Figure 1 (cartoon, rainbow, N blue to C red):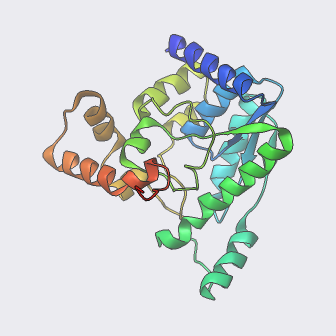
Figure 2: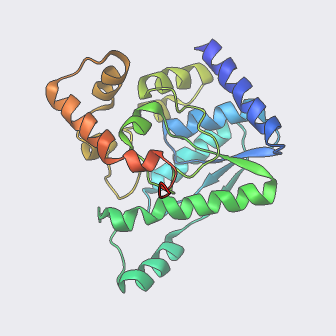
Figure 3: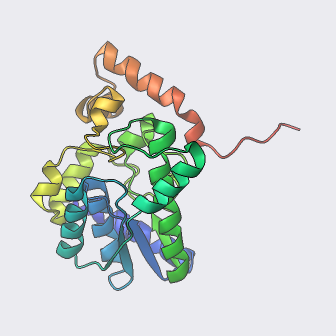
Length: 240
């Protein structure tokens, strides 16, 4: 795993140099993926890596966990509370407000898109690149918001399945609390990745790495991947 860490930090350094960037910006969610990502970034840009904590009707514990990660890796943070912005936009769109437990994707996907806008603001101000936190498990089934958390410049852990991310987290010194935390995109209170996907990360990772999984898990994974194909390509142009 240390060899993978060395390769990833070398790759990140090459991207920063090639883009003539001056630093890296990472959204800190309080989860394991963003923790591993910012730990890698800190190794590459020790004086110019920024973490951004962006609560949006989120579980308060997530912001505390995000700050814990920032403290452990000695990374400065900006905290931007997006509740009011989300409320204002939603009222303009629907004339209503949103309960924290609402799971309407047309509404809750506004949150990661607001976060994307926030990250690019800081990146532009700092002449930095936005570093995403998506892993191979999520990318395989399209478990990300188009032009939300999918709107980034670099995806350093995009070739690691969730199991490998956990292993790397231990190697990097990510707090055990973060490693053990149930995976959640935090789109609504009580949100659970595996419940929404309908398949566990263990099943998903096994299917990706070995092709072995139950028929039901395979059906779900293939359906999710097919349904999300549009997220993984550039906007379509007419063939003439």
